[in-house]
Amino acid sequence: MLDASRTIPGKVCSGFPSGIASKQRDRAVRRFRETVKRSSHRIIVCSLCRDTVTALRSGEGLCADLRSMLSLQPAPSFAVETIDCMAGCARPLTVAFKAQGKATYLFGSIDRGTDAGALVEFARLYASLPDGWCNSGQRPARLAGKILARIPAAGKAREQGR
Image (cartoon, rainbow, N blue to C red; front, side, top):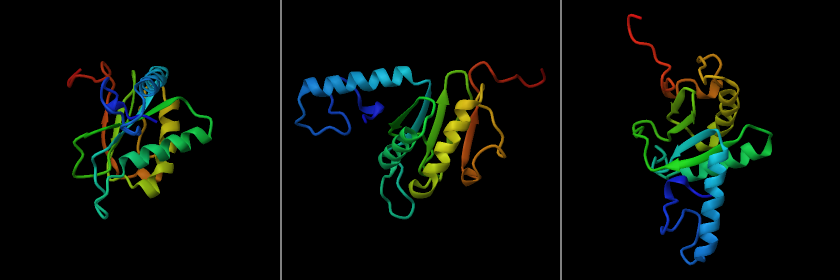
């Protein structure tokens, strides 16, 4: 699948050989954009984070794993995308969950090999929550200690003293 951060017209898209016909690439980009429009939930993975042990970038591989795992079981529609950086460099690999009107979550210290299943489990939980808000006891145990931020949806935060 295409990488949302690299779908700029006239640029070679991730996953396509540089010699691919322009019409094929354009059709694939249109299909990708339609999928994103239909998806109400997003999982965003950093593509630049390097594994702390191997120094390999594992974001693209994690995206492929998540897409595959989400396609195996009926689930709400999730667009799985990459972005070049989410400023979680001290705790690579970073993964965010985002949806309109819901809290946004940022996880760090994600291990592609052991955390993908927990991320899919969290995706199902997140989709089921009307405002996306959950406490640590509701999240998969494998993700304990890996949350970097929970950001309220726009308009949901309360002012101090009110």
